[in-house]
Length: 396
Image (cartoon, rainbow, N blue to C red; front, side, top):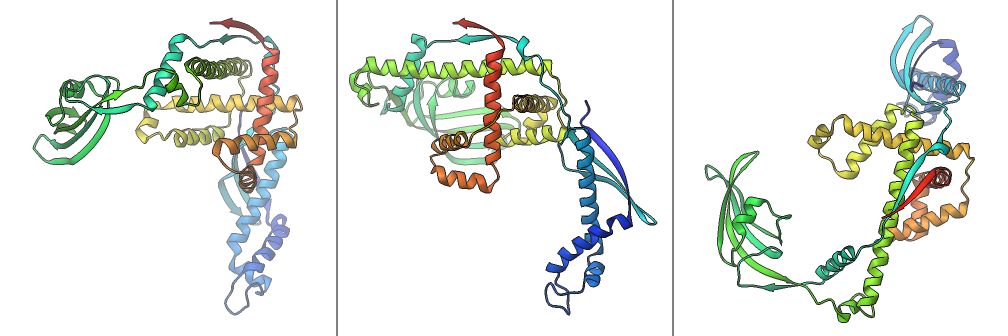
């Protein structure tokens, strides 16, 4: 199944006449021609003044109408804009060559033979303690210390940066950070380790722009003081005691692990479904998804170049899986009730802290209600797949 199509139309000028007349009348309503009131210029004058524009619009409309007929014959869907690649005028006719992509009709097959493992994890004591520590750190106090900087302290620096010739690159920059091996480059870590408040530091580094010299002073060294894990600490988070707090954290982690397990399961199912149904993906869809990925993750130009074809492969597979779910939803004749859309909008409104009616209005203005409906259909199709595949549950 190929997605690309090229068609050539030979359009007699007389065939375009009805379209040209109708489009010219639309131009006439808005035309502002000297010597006539707006919208009152004679049709012949409008046709003469806007001859090329009217002709282009007529050809575009003719081409689109006939392309859609061809796509319908294939029982497919138009999957890209229609691009005019070549246009020739020959006596009494136009010769127009166009390019576009389609999404071929296909049937999703083989899902009942898919075998997958579903891994179920439970919160370990270590995970509970790690999350508790994050809660501790969120309310920790910073206490000035006279001793030198150690792993886990909080430092504030003020420094200048010059190149090897002494040219100033950065002046009087203040920076604060947690002093850990994971957070600080090794050479900086060794230079700053043991430094006390008021002490100076100096470090030369080889970087892309050349050798740079960092020179400055430690403004402060602070010890991060964690509150004790007792019932008073639990009450800071509206828990009666530490037993209740640990129970709550365990539930939080188990909820997170359950979501991870479901996402992992769904990815495995879709991976197998994609292998069984290697449908072609229109290049237009892939390019759109690549742009979305770049925007969503803020990828820089050099990062995009580094990823190369891999970025397009990721986009292609993501779109293929979406198309498979959408087609399966059609096969199953899945429908979405109005109440389900309303519920989804309420969930989104809660997520974005918006009034549901305000969000709904904005979605309607952008024509995005359809997107929500399609997302619900895909979700239902996914639930159907999970009920059909052969699943082995593994508890870890």
